[in-house]
Length: 227
Image 1 (spheres, rainbow, N blue to C red):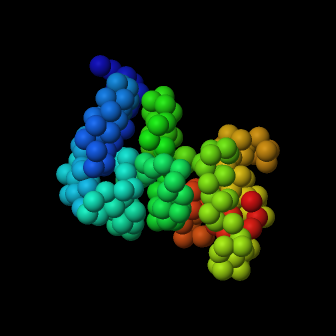
Image 2: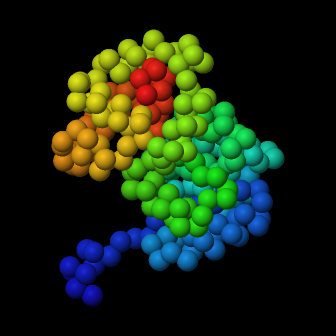
């Protein structure tokens, strides 16, 4: 293999599956292992096993069930995202767990998947999250966040407005677009700037707001009543 060919070879995205249901783990493993650019590096049956599994397998993305018997996915996500260089987390849930999902997103999860999500969409979600995007679809996720994070239900609205007010005008425009569920490419078209410039604005506003990812930016926008 030439040097040029070696440079183009990408390491597979490493995935850890966390779910107390062995059948769910097996199904997800089969789906993910069928993609050449993804690798299931480990499994865990409870949130209590996550720190050791992450240390042992060094995943890029963790698929995290919410409801587990000893340590649930919410607590496990909070623990993981509180550490430096933690993997991205996608929570697995159903629609009857809206407020649990919100807590996971606030803890730093990059999005969520319903357990009946089609296989192709699961693969797409893992790839996007590993690439720095967030699972914040305009249809499902925005409706969920709007339902549980509306301004009437959050006394922190003033603080959220203050935080957004500290952004530059362009950063604020980007933050509001993220709150509407826009991707980098869509923000680029809406605001007439290159995708590289959008990414630079996103990086700066994350630092200014002391947030982990785009989902938390969207939640802040909703808390401020601006979405």
